[in-house]
Length: 324
Image 1 (cartoon, rainbow, N blue to C red):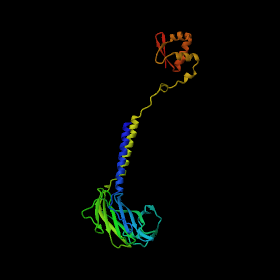
Image 2 (cartoon, rainbow, N blue to C red):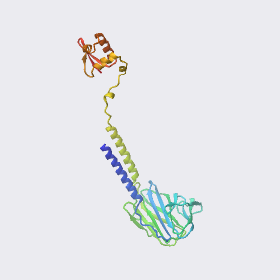
Image 3 (tube, helix red, strand yellow):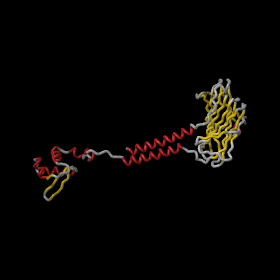
Image 4 (cartoon, one colour):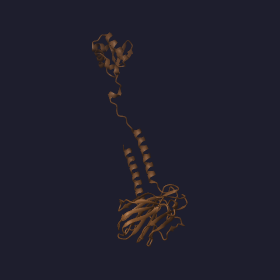
């Protein structure tokens, strides 16, 4: 029981470590974004994860506050997925309109782009538009990530943060566009930050950073956790089988009940009850004990022996009887 408890605690500990690491990754201490009440701002975060040897996934959160009211149009690439919009953390209804003539974005321009139509915008409301997209690259070589964002109005402040996947590193000849860019790290991920203070209304701005990565340098804690749980589960099953203890058998279930016992008559039952298990008694003694004749005793003992209820042991001219 103690072994099972110890293994269970080990599984819980490994799972807790994995969850803790996963939480640390998702809650990366990013540079502080812009959040000045009463000031139009745009704050964009692109968190990159490496999903395979040739594909990285960008998860973009586009947070903004518009000083004004009415309908606001945001343009995003047509190759994105998982689009959602929230107002102060609550889902907000919007519409998507495909613009096949759009050529503002450098990747897959032939597919056009999507206009996000946000109705009933009020001054100083904070919206967050979230979406994801995939980027192809060659693992083990110098790669880059490109985030193209549309700025629908002239913000007083604009900040863009790109968080590289865990395990990514910057080569000596790294580059970041536009320039200047600020590089920082929390020991697990590298963040690249751009801060702009200029009139960019209606523009599509590219934010590009080069880095190197060899898959799977990004630690896949979920795989480790799953493998640990499976291994521990197998060990627990093997230990349970090994240490499984059969319940102690009682005298009633140690021996099978002889079905012939139920069909004995009174005299036969008396002879059987007179005999003791595991102890022989002379057949002649049964005559004195029961008062039955020698012939009757012999007949009953013969019948009980056929029914496997007694055992007869011959010693010279005499028989000794034992109950089974």
